[in-house]
Image (cartoon, rainbow, N blue to C red):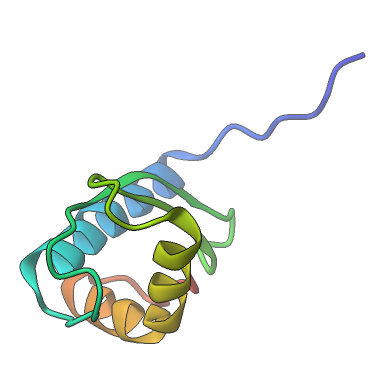
Amino acid sequence: MSQSVRIPSKRQLQVAELIKKAVVEVLNSGRIYIPGLEDNSITVSEVRVSPDLKIAFVYVLPLNKTIDSKAFMSLINQYDKQIRFEVTKLIHIKFSPKM
């Protein structure tokens, strides 16, 4: 049985790469102060964008294992609006995707 797997379009891949670079810039440059993540390096492993470019799935991981994954995701989710705001300032596309 075959499953229908959608291959991302060229535009989806381009927008995903723009978002990935911007998220890395925002998280690693200190544009946003997130208490508890001062000494942690963060890696963005992948970004997937929906076909309408309105939703972006951003996969992030802490490089240091000084913080557990649940606490890390809780901190990131608390600051998602600020991260989206800063990312929007760095990329120039018509709609800012929800992350």
